[in-house]
Structure formats: structure tokens, C-alpha cells
Length: 239
Ligand code: C5J
Image 1: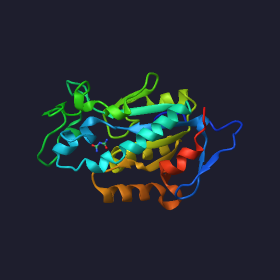
Image 2 (image 1 turned 45 degrees about the horizontal axis):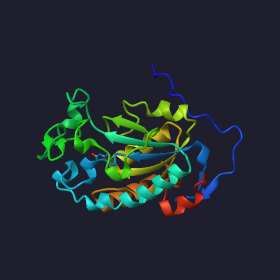
Image 3 (image 1 turned 60 degrees about the vertical axis):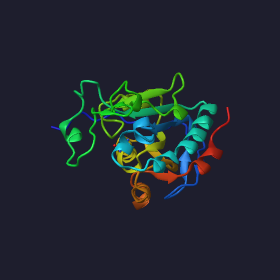
């Protein structure tokens, strides 16, 4: 038997005139009153030298180029008084929410829960699990702790979006082909339109970033839209 259907965001009753943001594969009909900014996993363990990502041998500079555009976007978003949602990937200290399929990777190197330079890797409450200081949440901004790659799995994100009347997401964060992609694909299945910003997302592997963005906007926007903060910022309302 199929499970009960997931509630979907309601259609606009009276549709305000959307601002058309230049995007691939076509302009994004931006509806600020129904849109949240979703910043995915901008955590020290991924972005800072000495974190989990760096310990795996990755060059964090590929992620750090997203910080300045995310800071500028967040500042403008807050000024427009629109909802902001941050996510953090991580696990409870007893690791009960860390599935073997995620913990045991074939390669060597540090694993989630192991001691690292910034505390236990991707464990809630440890310094490395924190969001980077530049993007610290303000009071009233939601912070979703997620044990998976996608931001909907085992979290209250879907219910939160419905309660805020959200049906569009502007998405930034890391990494493009992992947690951003997993989240955007699932958001699309759940009825949310996603605009992914190329300068506000990043991957340790630049070629994955480029390809992951193409995969979102390909086939008529099979998972959503792709643009940049330079195109979106002029469309933000001023408070
Ligand atoms: C990864 C993420 N790459 N936030 N996490 O393990 O994309």
C-alpha cells in the first residue's frame, strides 16, 4: 500500500506579479512573499582549513569563494525581512542517527564521529559542526539539524515551509553535488520551486559544481532554475 500523500504547498490564490529573475533555463518568477532563503551546511567542518573536508584531502578554497556572495545575499535578504533557513549536517553525540551506510565508506581517512581538529567530526555541539561565523544565524532564523544529505530527511523542514506559506526556495550552500542537489531534487518532488545560485554554491570539485548546476536546469529545468546572486539581488524588495 502506498503511504499517505505528503501535503503540498497551496497554489497562490491571488498571484502577485512576480519579478522575473534572469536564470537557466528561463526567467525565474520570483515571488518574495512566498520565498525563503535556504543556506545549506555552511559549516566549519566543510569550509575551514582543518575541518572534515580538508582532512579528507579537499581544497576548501573552492567552497570558501561562496562566503562573500552568501554574506551579501543574506544581508539583503534580512533587510527585505524575508525568511531565512540554515541547515547543518550532523549527528547526535551517541551517533544513534548515523546509519552504517553513511558511516562506513570504503576509503581510509577520518569518519563521522572520529576526533578531528575541531572536535568530533560532524557531531552536534562540536566546534566543527557550527555554522561559519560570517553566516551566524540571527534570532528568529530557523536552523535545521539534518542527519542526512537532504534537508528534508528526518527533519521538520517540510512542515516549517508550509507553516510559513513558502512555495519557492532560493538555495545556496555546500556542496553543490551532494547536500544542495539532494535537497533541491527532493524539494522539487515535494512541490517547491528552487532557484539555485551558482556563486553561492560550491563543490570541492569545480567540474562537479558545473555539471551539478547543469543537471538542475537541463531538460527544461528538470529540478529547478539556476542563476546568480547578481541577478537576484536587484529583484529583492526593499523594506
Ligand atoms: C557532504 C554536504 N558533502 N553538505 N555534505 O558530505 O554536501
